[in-house]
Image (tube, rainbow, N blue to C red; front, side, top):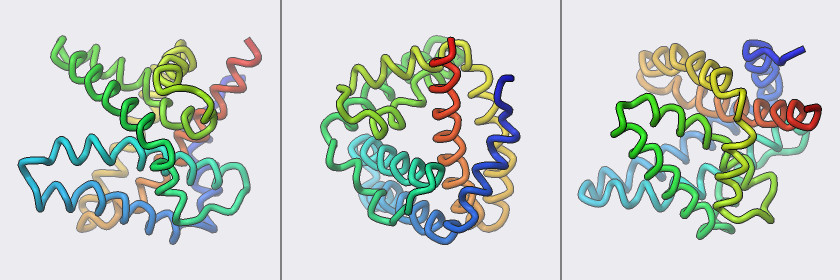
Length: 197
C-alpha cells in the first residue's frame, strides 16, 4: 500500500516530540546564518546564500535522519555538511541554476526540477561516497513517479508556514524542523518503494 503524506507528517511530528527544542534551535541558527550575513551585505546576498545553503541543507538532513532513525540528534550536526563543502556547494549551485532555468521556461518546469532534485542533500548525507552529480542524478531517478506526491507534501506545509509567520514569524522555527524531518522520512519511504520495484 502506498505511503500517505498525512501519516508521514504525523509520524515525523511524533519522532520530533522529544527533540522539538533542539529542532527549533537548529532552525533558528540556520535562519540566522543564512539571513543575517545577507542583511549585512545586501550586495552579496545571492553569493552568501549560495555558499552556505548547500552545506547547511546537508547538515539539516543529518539532523533529520538522526531523529527518524532513533539516534541521538545533536546541534552540531547542522555543520556536518561543511565536511563536504565543495560537493554540497556544487550540488546547490547546479540545483539553483537548473531551477532558475526551469522557472524562466514558464515556471512549471522550474517546480518540476525543484521537486525532482529535492532529495539531493538527503542522498548526500545518506550516501557520502557519491559525487555531487551522482547525488543530483540519484534524486532525479528516486523521485521519478513520486514527484506529484512529493509536491503534495510540500503544499501541505504551506498553511503551517503561513500560520508560523502570523505568529510573529516565531512559528516558522517550529515548522522548519518538522518539514525537514518529514522530507527525510519521505526519502526513506522512497528507498523502500524503489527497492520493491
